[in-house]
Image 1 (cartoon, rainbow, N blue to C red):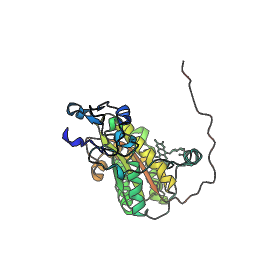
Image 2: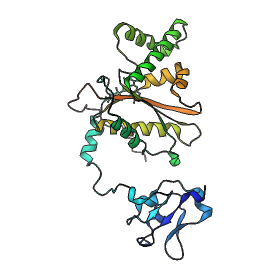
Image 3: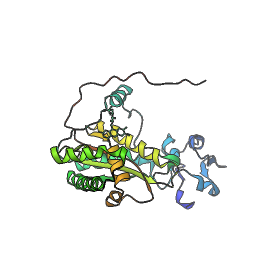
Image 4: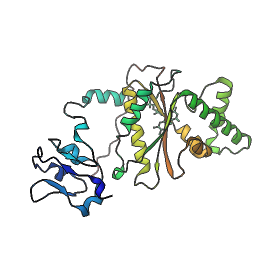
Length: 278
Ligand SMILES: Cc1cc2nc3c(=O)[nH]c(=O)nc-3n(C[C@H](O)[C@H](O)[C@H](O)COP(=O)(O)O)c2cc1C
């Protein structure tokens, strides 16, 4: 474990500015006698593997975990402007009408790859995306969930506060309208091992990032509590069907796909609830 850090300094380019030392959250980097940064072996186990040392170096002279800084994106001038980001945050809407087509596979992959950059507690980075990458697979899951719900209804085993699922089944049977998955062609479930420090926030943050990036790419999304309760609580055998590990916390579900709806303007929410303490 300790050897695997591979903390390397390119002494040709390092200016010995000490920024990597100052920003290390675990405070394990120090300037050695020759003035270059180093990590003493007994501290290596405390590394968060966050790569701040690599990210902050103005001359790209720090490599850690075997990663070549030349492979990083340069940040200067690369952020969206705040007005655009504000429009995205305020203009994002829950999409409940989808085109009957699968996403471009490259875009599908990219949405997940980018969302994977979301922060996790103590940089545990254990969020797992369980995905259905085609409308046929969502249809398969829907059939299974509807059949499972029908069985619960027949056995009078639907908990009182979940009784609305009986309506969802009826609406599906009578009108072919899918209230649970909203007729979306794709589903993502974020789960994480219960043993990591912050599994639930990790999953929710990852899906929040996923949602915003998806909508910036013209892909509609909706948080899917109805799918979560159906899969995780009412029909836990569906978790196994989807291959979600038993030791994982089911963070949340989100469906997505190309929207068959276009919003023209933002909604207008009441002012933020802010409590200025002390
Ligand atoms: C945690 C969470 C769970 C949700 N579950 C569902 C759901 O199961 N089905 C659905 O249609 N919308 C669901 N929504 C969407 C909300 O109803 C929606 O965010 C709200 O009505 C405001 O609309 P907007 O997202 O377009 O601003 C959920 C939202 C959140 C944050």
